[in-house]
Length: 113
Length: 111
Image (spheres, rainbow over the protein chains, first blue to last red):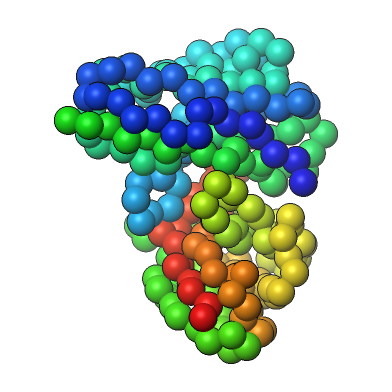
């Protein structure tokens, strides 16, 4: 099935550093979403993007819907220990079923105090 | 305010045993989903239900069956568990916006 390429697979950083991760597809997406999964929990929606070029922030998190509509980016500024978890991108492909999302493979983030 | 509730949280099965994973949502959402999560594989869709009374296969449906009992409940059944079904299973629901709401997961080990 269709998959999203998410990178990096993992990141090990120091508290206070900024983080960037991205998600790419070979096809056009109408919607991009970013989720965070805390250890032992289900994913929780962080940011939703609905149009090309859109830049949206949620506290220290900023996400962008790529101009080509084939990629999206998530940045975390001034990381803190509670940012630890797995970050997933997800998207609604153009022409796909409107009730199914495609998920990336996730980026594992570890933050050392 | 429970959102999506999954039971059980943990389960160990012997190969060949059967079990049903339960999922209920209290947000009046139409669509419900079952995913499995394996290391390095992300979230893979097993089955989904776009509305009460309908179910469809996802990416990895083999070895599973589902029932949309009513608008609130969507169960996943393993008829004859296999070690390859060891995974973390997530139920999710979706209303009128694109984002899903996930449950906290069922951690299943098949020995």
